[in-house]
Image 1: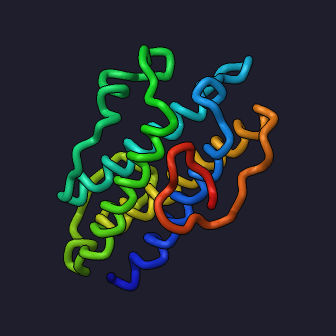
Image 2 (image 1 turned 60 degrees about the vertical axis):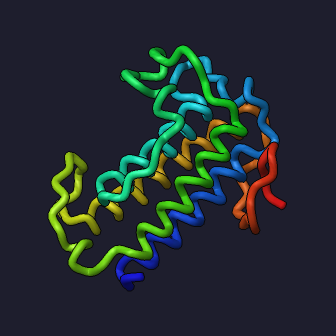
Length: 174
């Protein structure tokens, strides 16, 4: 793995565990709950984060089929969603795209990282490395939202405990 990508890959793996920890102990109904003032639900954010990792591997020219695309197709806001993935489905796809992303990041060459990858993100660095770095920040931003929503649902704070091995059905830290 290129040394410039290694810390970013580490943050993607940490964020993978943090989202799983945030989903731990939630029911599908709780995860779909929106605060009275509006905003996103945990389910929406988890689907969006999974979808954004699919976006990244596609931009890096190593796409993976996205079974969550059917829920997000033609959606401009959370109000447009008519069917939700279950938390088990989200966990499964989150782990699947993460494994693929880690392989993609490991395989990228220095020349590939330097290639221009023009995007609309608010960073000056428009290489593939810049894209990867911005999307790590994007991951972290939305994970903060998920952790906040979790607390608003009366659940314990997000744990920084690290997952070991595959997540069993029902999710959570082992």
